[in-house]
Amino acid sequence: MTWPASRHWEDYLGPVRKDTATLAQAIAKYEPVVVLTRPTQVDSARKTLGCSSSIQIVPIPVNDLWTRDTTPVYIKGPQGVTGVDLNFNGWGKKQKNPNDYKLARALLKHSIVNDNRNPNKTRDQLEQELMTTLGVKKVIWFEGLRGKDITDSHVDCVARFLAPGVVVVSQPFRTQNGDDWTRQYDEAMKVLQIATDARGESLKIVQIPEPNPDTYNLGEGGCPSYVNFYIANGAVFVPRFGDEVADKKAQDVLAEHFPGRDIVALDISTIASGGGGIHCSTHDQPK
Image (cartoon, rainbow, N blue to C red; front, side):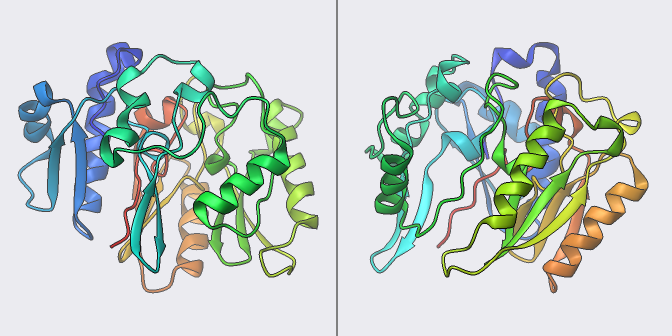
């Protein structure tokens, strides 16, 4: 995880740090947590994070909390665990976070994939790069929403794999029919319904309805998605938005697909107001 320091949060920097601490403390009950923190903010971060021996603070220059984007992608092979630097550049240079541009490289000391969001590369070339670099065998492409949010749509707020061949999709609340997010959902469903997994088999699609917009206030660009969950050792961490029916439905779906793991629901509304969620602000590192 990363201790947020970006000026983009403005008056919400305090609340988003509180959400980050809540999440770190919850995960630390199940597995060790590393929080990357600006060297000048180590003491204040420790005060907020608490004194758990399961939370380690690592001093390193950082900007924002989106660890899923800024830190290495870890792959596990015959030689052990390797980290891949995907050259984060502020989602196509939409936001200036110079420390975060260099974060994965600082952790790994090398780079593999080209930056600038891979300009002038075809989809086939990008697929081949992913297969070569990450060892994946199949890529499923969504169109996204260019310019709708800073990332052109967080794919991990739209769809996630629950298991090999099983995909969960975030279903927009029914009153939102016709908006951009609903159109994205419709397009994603069309893609998934005809897509196959790496074995060539059809996908099983599970849907989790999003909460009623009347129950939360995330502002423009917020992420009211339950599929932005994090799978930990012994638990799954999922957002809670205040819609009791939708919150419970999401928890029940995850409990069905992750037997033996606790389902832990957390209010991370300030993180969600920034356009991400629990998955976006965490990044697992295998042993």
